[in-house]
Image 1 (cartoon, rainbow, N blue to C red):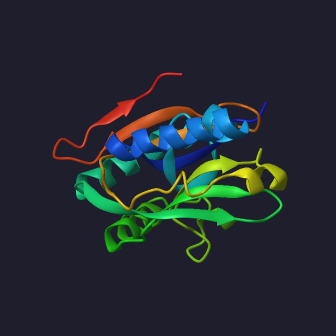
Image 2 (image 1 turned 45 degrees about the vertical axis):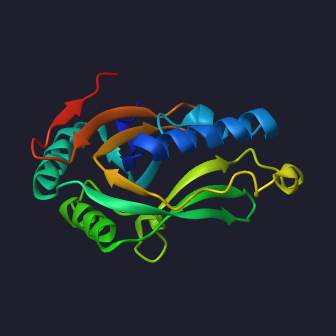
Length: 195
């Protein structure tokens, strides 16, 4: 049996933005039976990076992220409307402005995690990363997509204070699980989540 797991390091949504996102997920579920994201995510989030790692390297990752959190205080980011990728699988998402603070935080995270056990993959390449929160994906058919009234689901551009990041574990066909949560504040706490 392999000791490898897939993880993502994410900014978890909070406050009004989290509530608005839950409302959008509920809209897609009740009006269009689009529920993959609602049923598979532990919380709506912005993915900063993903990796396949050896499970025994989690302690090193915890230590690295704890140190990073000591260097960063909370910062604001702003939504930038809805975005849509029309490919084989349609992705509807909340876009986020790529602020200097957000990009610096992501770059710092990537550079601090530049270890042999934390190898990069295509998702993490700087040119392909987009700050977004997916709200509909995988179960969106083009027929159903054409029925969505985008005038009713407009999202206002609002600020959100980045207060915490999490490590989540993901597997195909299973709901994501949170492995750890780190606060960006004066106390710089890390809460380990037991599985």
